[in-house]
Image (cartoon, rainbow, N blue to C red):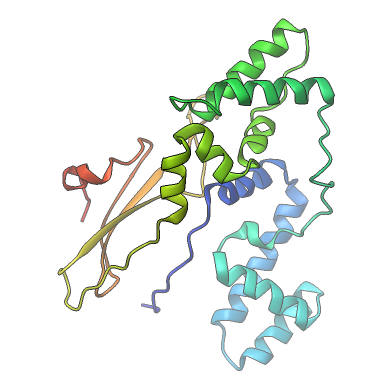
Length: 247
């Protein structure tokens, strides 16, 4: 068995961007990324010196050794094929391409259905945008376009609007603590993350959501004691003791 290593977690926005890349990339680009992955895996786990393996991968891919090293760094950080997709020239992010009328509708929906108390989910903003576009006989933007504009808002300003100034300040000033344990099974931590995969139904192949992965980790040894994978959102912290862990 090879040595286990940790992989850094990614923000939800970054995972969504990776999924969007998967949906939009054409087959030729994806095949090229898979070829890069195969060559890089050989370079990481093959025989001989690293320099020799990198030169062999560079020759296989038709790239310079320096470029191969950059690809290895990206792949090592995420271990995902999407990290090897060639970066395409993207449009200026400051340029909003939906047109002034649609942008006005989105901004108004965000003000009335997101930056309010009690808090409402982002999905309610998209529904409101569709309703307003239908009422004004406009073509509604995609769900991703609406969510991107919500996620681009300043986090502290959003917190003040949705939680109130006092709660927002408490969140901003809070500092994370540390979990310390010296013996196995002394302290077990349960953490959750959205998996970087989209589940589709068996009939129409339409997306039904991303699964949640919950892990029970021994703090002292960093060993995974159990896991739970499902489409339901994880239980809150006070209910962790009820979580069904598959050992």
